[in-house]
Length: 286
Image 1 (cartoon, helix red, strand yellow):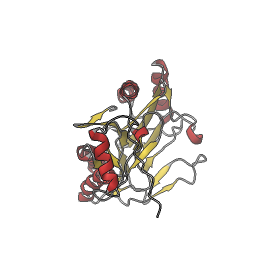
Image 2 (cartoon, one colour; image 1 turned 120 degrees about the vertical axis):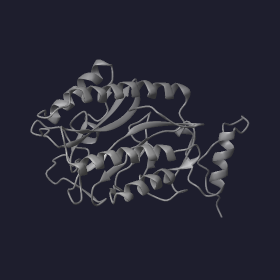
Image 3 (cartoon, helix red, strand yellow; image 1 turned 30 degrees about the vertical axis):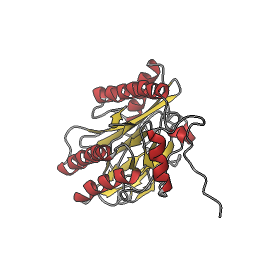
Image 4 (cartoon, helix red, strand yellow; image 1 turned 90 degrees about the vertical axis):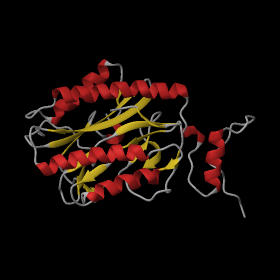
């Protein structure tokens, strides 16, 4: 029989590190482990961290200006202007045909909402603003929920619980944990409220490219999925639906991007970019 090729390669000619030993142990147990290229160097981490500062600034500027009566196209302009003023590039713009710089997802739009002049924010709307920055070749990604004026108690709870899911997922992300540990913690919390956790979209590795391994699902079983080790950078971004976890692509979207909750009930999402360290996660974007 042929021996399965190892994903993890120790540095040739160098003694095994504790990282090497731990990853190789789990690989010997049949677990999915990262490749060494997913471990960011100190220089790369600093680059991603700088990109994260700009990305946080973009969302802070949106928070300062967002209001009832504005269009989502205006939000796109705010994001684009801030990003470019700080020497960065909006990663979404023209990415696989996406026509704008930011995703603006209102109410039942789960994610990838396209900014439009005709989409006007109204009292009671909940809207997710999701932005990714490229600065000097390094990527950082985050999203926030905004409540326009006063909304219903049901929507307020959904927004709050979605944020709690992100925080609980981050707490479950320990050095040498598995992706399934994160998803399991998120799923349990969402299900307390009978909410659906979207399964067709997930978090992801990030930093040197827009989307890298691993896929960070927001549901699952402990001990499943890829091993997460210090030096990896990834997003956690649970999409929590008030009703079913199922989704569909809006048939009226000519670009094929906008994702709608399956029963068209409201959806909420929060996202940070995280660095795994020896002591737990460090948040690189807010």
